[in-house]
Structures are given as structure tokens and as C-alpha cells.
Image (cartoon, rainbow, N blue to C red; front, side):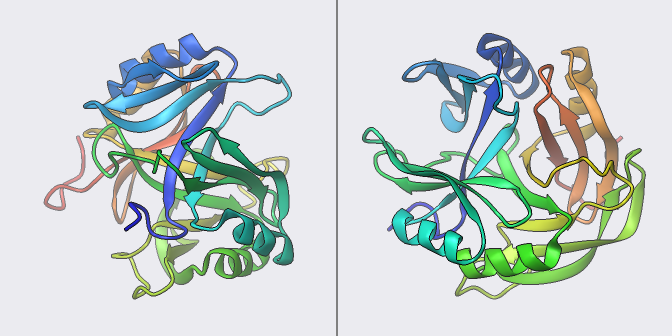
Length: 271
């Protein structure tokens, strides 16, 4: 049986101008250790388990950004559905040695994501624990087109809910337009959700593109945000409470954006 359900997030990596600087930043922030991969690439491990990868950008025009990959057992068929649903295929399926097959695409709003058909490498060996991936969401201005796209391509079932979010200053506000994604064949809702869709509001600059924001679990959100700043990073949205814990949106010291999430403990807010 596959380690990851069809269409579930299964991997993240970040493209950076300076790989060694990235290893220092994330090693200090999350306690990751690293092992060399093929070429300018490093696997990140937490407690000896694969959690992510860091890669040196081969082309300066590429964005400095975290990328998310969704599992598929038939990458050719998934790529075909992407085209049929109005998405764009950026990289056709290509084999990554014995590890698996990957492709890159963009949804109708322009948010880029990856596909992964596992070979020897299935994906995360650890998630939903401190120092590892715990959530991803697409942030878009074209919610209707994007919702239909992900439902058609991946079979996601949506659950709309009023969540708490942040305006551009990071202030918590209620009533954010948010949809959770549950895999096909499950009962839609928070217990089965594997990702989601948020709307980029007019509070943000018009030039901000659609993108995927990936989250990493931490034991203390406030401490993680402060530590990121001490390491040369920036805080895009200061720590604030959401229904599923306390989060912050951060940038590393090279500009890649990610979020950290501290799960709630007995309903108490982090100090």
C-alpha cells in the first residue's frame, strides 16, 4: 500500500541562491541535519527522518521559494487532467533516477506546485511533528476557477469555513474565505483535510502572485518567529491565533516564505 494517499502532499523543497546559508538557517531554526544529494541538493532530516530538501538554484531567474508536491500513482494521467482543467504544465514528467518521477504545473491562478510518483522515495518520513511539514494552502485571487481546478485534477472535496487569518500587518481577523481540501473517498472536514485554499484580499499588494504557503510544526510559534529574525530572516505576519493553533508567516534570510504552526495545547494560547 502506498505511504501517501492519492493527491496528498508528500514532499517540500526550497530553491535557494546559497545552499550552505540555507542549511545554516534551517539547521538552526528547526534542528535539521543534512546529507548530500545528487548535485547541488541536500536532504533535510529531523530525528534522522526525511522532512524536506534544499536545492541551489541553477537559474537566477527562478524564484527563491518553497515548493509543494502532491502524490500521484499515475503522473501522466494527472498531467493530462491539469491541461484539461485549464492549468499549465511547466515541466513534463521526468524521472529522478530510481527515486521517482516528478512534474511541475501551475493552476489557473498561477500558483505553482509539483507532482510526485514515488519510486524508491515515497516522500516525508516524518510530518505533523515539530520540525516537519504539517500543512499547505494555495493563496489565490481566483477562488472559483481554482476550487474547480483542484476538485477536477485531484478529486478534492471542499469544506468552506470561517477561519481566522491575518491582514498585511498580521492582525488576526475573522471571516476569512477559506476552503479545506479532503481527498476523494473521505468524509470532508477538518479531520480528513490535507490542505486548503485561502483568498488573497485587497489588503495585500496587487502585484503579489498566487502561491502555495507551506507550514512547519513548531513547539513554540513566538519563539520560532523570534529565532528566525535572529538568524537573519523576517516576519511577514507576526504570531496570531487560528482555530488550529498559533501561526506566523516568515521569510528565511534569502527571501523564501514559509509558515510555522504551534498546535493548541489544552486550549491555551502560547506565551
